[in-house]
Structures are given as C-alpha cells and as structure tokens.
Length: 237
Image (cartoon, rainbow, N blue to C red; front, side, top):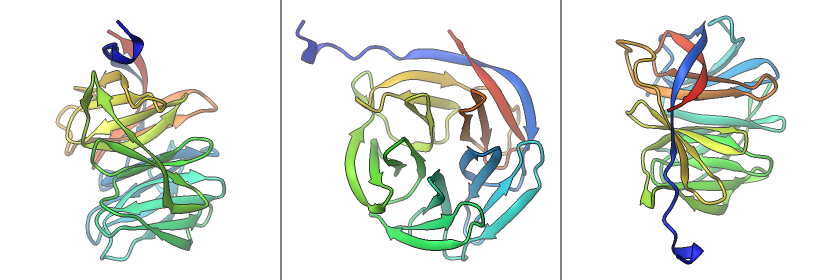
C-alpha cells in the first residue's frame, strides 16, 4: 500500500502507577498547570472565582496569588521565556504576565474559545475545545503560525483540554473523561492513550491538569477541585 494511503497506527494504551501524592487546593477549579524553576504555577476558572498562583509542590499554600476581574473565566496558561501567557474562556482575550510577580504586562486577542496553553521551543500551543491545535507566535500571540488537526486512527478528536509538552509530544486531557492523549505534533496523530480511571475515587470533579518536571523527568496529574496531585509513571498495557 502506498505510504500516503496507509492506515494510521493504532495508539499505544497505558495505565499508570502512583509514585507519590502531594496536596492540592480543593477549591482550585484547575485550568492550567506548569512546573517552572522548582515552582508550581496554577491557573483556575469559574466566574468571579478565577485566579492564578505560584506555590511549591509540597505545600498547597500559594506564595503569590492574583485574582482575575469577575468578568473573566480563567483558562489555561504557560510560561515562555520570562513571560506567563494566560487564556480566558469566552472573552477572546489573553493576558501576558511577568512570570515572577504575576503582574499583567500586556494582553492579546484570539477568536473562539480559550481552553489551554503549552509551548515547545518556538511556539505557544493552544487548544480551543475543537480538534485543532493552534501554534502561536510568542512575540505576537494573537498571530496563528499554523494549525494542527488532531486525529485518532483517522477520526477527529475534540474536547481537547489542558495541555503539556512532554518529551516532544503534546499531552492533553480530554474534557469530562478519565483519558489523557499523547499527540505527535508533526502529524496530529494520537500515538498514546492513558487511562487514568480510579486514580481519585469519589473525586468532586473531573480530571484536568498535567504537569511535567523536565529536569527530574517527573509526570504529575490532578483535577478540578481535587485535594491531591499525583506523581505517576506510565504503564504500557
């Protein structure tokens, strides 16, 4: 069969092993997480209750915390260089902040909804709830440099939520499920599916939040209004 007509490869299936647990603010409606210079950054949602904060992994107490204006439903964020970029859900507005103080130093506009952000070495990577990831220019984040359709065995994947760049792949929560997908950023193909079922029995809300510590090669997950963050190892099925 000619290569261009070959069927997409089936994604690898994974379970997980919990390595260690850490505290998480049970009032945090988690939208974005990032580990940077030994600190955990978190952005949260809900109208009138959205904030962004900095804390250590070991303590749920935030060293810095900034609330958004009540008109904004906060969404995902990422750190690129010395700046933190943060989305809002339906306002079409993103904030640019100093990563150390969280002070707003700029803003940008985008169309559609804002769900999540991560980055590679050259671009911000944004999800909007559809099957398309947008690659944005960090110097001008309102500019879309390219778009990537995400597919699983040839079928479009939607509800792509919180994102994390992990070893050259995009990891993504699928909204209102217990699944995390691994996306090949060169093709958009889903190359792995991680089943997180049962990690927090009787959780108050859904799985949402992926954090990768590149220096120590550690992977963490949490959810909206969860009381714990879990360090995990993937187990191939």
